[in-house]
Length: 254
Image (cartoon, rainbow, N blue to C red; front, side, top):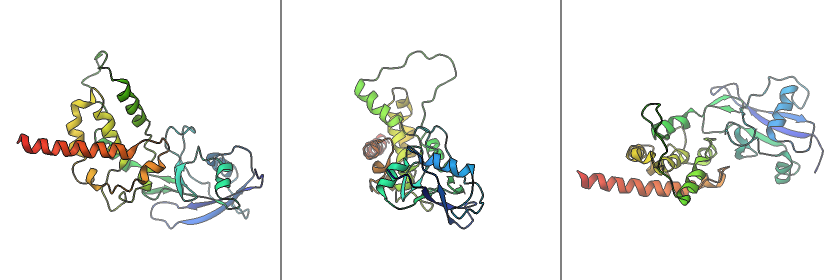
């Protein structure tokens, strides 16, 4: 692998209303570097490729092991986690080219590579993506799940609300109220929980209105970019079937 200096282009922006511009950086190469380590090197000495001092670059990160979802950004045109994006692999994908870093486009820019993902968390509130309990007293052991359901639920529970799925979704944008595949998948997760089933109807009602399941265009981009390989299209299909069943049950129960 080439030990040449790493060339990085970063799309910078002071805030959501400020114009964006590209700034080039160059840092020394070290084996096994990821994008976060590159940004840390730039932070140590914030000068551009021409040696001109610049403001330190802003970005988000926390766990550094692809669990928190905070460090999502667009790297060479592809949305992914910057903590698990290794420089050596990126150079193999685009030999001789600088590495471009951009903030996600579906959320307001806070500064540089930092974005405000509040919309995703508001969607989780809308679909009640939790198992409610009454009080803090010990409820005792819950119902047991069979192994097949437990394995499927565990896979869905690995969602870290990173934003990759909605960044790739053509139906998720500032002109749409679509809640996105991540929130829909969480409906399937919590409606399959032995205790969560008690509120299944409320969650289905939440995705039957504006911005819900019918706003999905079935582009299937989400399942291709999910860093956890969550079967999001399967979740969407299950949610669609469940909402259809609930709609007919409401009609015939009235």
